[in-house]
Amino acid sequence: MDAKKYGYTVITSDDLLPGFDELDLVDGLILNQDEIFIDNTITGKVYKMKTLSGDDIIVKPPINIIDFLNSKGEYEGKDISYFQHPDLTTSHREALTYITFSSFFKLYCVPTTTIFKNPHDGSIMSAQLFIKNSGKLAKGNKLKCYDNLGYLYKFAIADTIIGNHDRNRGNVLCSPAANSEYQTIYLIDNALSFDFSAVVGANIPAYANHLLRRPIPNSVLNWVKSLNTSDLITLLEKRNVPTEIISMTCNRINAAQQWVNYIRANRYFSKDLGMLLEFMRSNFFCDKQISDSMFDVRSRIIRKGMRGEPFVHLGPNQKDKTKIIEER
Image (cartoon, rainbow, N blue to C red; front, top):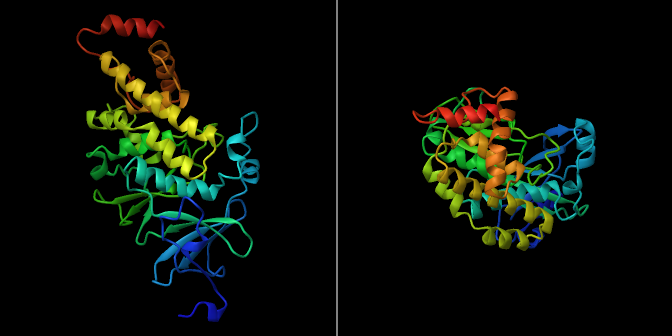
């Protein structure tokens, strides 16, 4: 089809932003804004479009974050400066999540995503491959094929490192859509990633609720230790990510790695996923802070009503240590 003949705008790789030019997702994308996939007055319109090769693509304009937070009423008294960078729109966050997961974490669970400049109004829009035959994560679906391989632990840790506290069931796709032990998981709707003030809350990722009180496999702990912040800095600087955002992202990696060192040296502490996620959000940076805060974090998790046993597991010779923990 000659798209231009019918008045459509054809987006090519020339319209991609610098730093995102290695992606060709939008090459030949037909920008036809008549086919609205979702119409939401808060988050804006989301369009389902096609490339000239026939691929279905989801295209989103940037969200006005301040309007979004106003509608939620969740930002009062919180620092929202992380959302006010012109170089980090919600469209940027969508594409950066894909690049960070695939290129840095080596986790291929975010559909191919890029960003481009709309030639009509100059707005920065994200474009993501549409996953056919998929459905939202069903309640109670524990994705056993991923769980057994340790991937869900990695997904949860990576989501927390990049400040994504909005991973509810609606932001997790499973394919095929039918509830099955053998589904492929996709993490979508990443517009609120790199949120280190947690203005939209600090939710546990929906796919990891059943893992909170389980010990993290050693293979996953080794993966955490292998993450190189220098590689992440290079990746994010190439995309003009603000320095303070890069710093906060690296801080969470450093906190996670120090936590791994500590629990390996103090084996009577549990290796539970829930505790690691709490520590990364709290950004503890030394052994004394980690040790002193073990008790506070454990109490917070229990008070919140998260199901499961206390996070310090009892061994045959640990009664005295546990008694001290309870008294603290």
